[in-house]
Image (cartoon, rainbow, N blue to C red; front, side):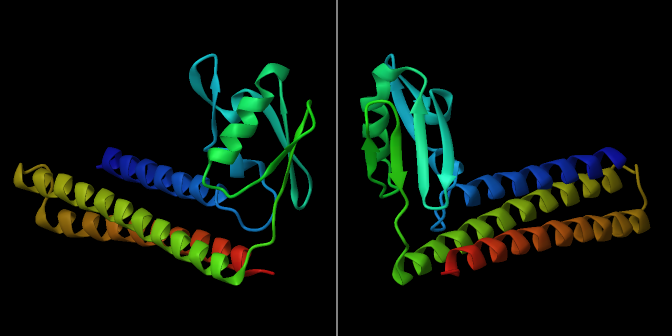
Amino acid sequence: MEQVFKDIEKRMSNTIEVLKQEMASLRAGRANPALLDNVHVEYYGVPTPLNQVANISAPEPRMLRVQPWDKGIIGDVERAILKSDLGLNPNNDGNIIRISIPQLTQERRQDLVKVVKKNGEETKVSIRNVRRDANETLKKAEKNGDISEDDLRRYQDEVQEVTNKYTQQVDDVVNRKEAEIMEI
């Protein structure tokens, strides 16, 4: 049974990490290098993540700086940023690409909050699926005679406690990101 609990803890914590990564890539009006995590550049014919072909930094609160290691791909990097759905306009000076992060409108902020809440709900569904899998494993163990009916109830209560803990973490992540987005 200890292995079952280690497994659900691991799977639920991985789900939280994925949510945090998704939240980092959402634009909140501040420059954040994670904003460009989903941008891929054609590098020698292979779509490559931007952070593997360039140094990305945020020297100012509303500015990103992208410095490709290979100067020959600076045009490809610029095109990849323009093609992304981020709505960013890169400025290329031949060596470095500077990206000014525009102020978010209230309507855009509300749309981003909806996306954040949707991601949070999807994460909660994933956590509930892990709970369901754990409960099915426990029921099989009880059916096989490995654990008693009382143990089954106790273990299911423990699984629910773990589920509640991770659901609360999802709510915390979502609330923090929502506050960050709505901050003017």
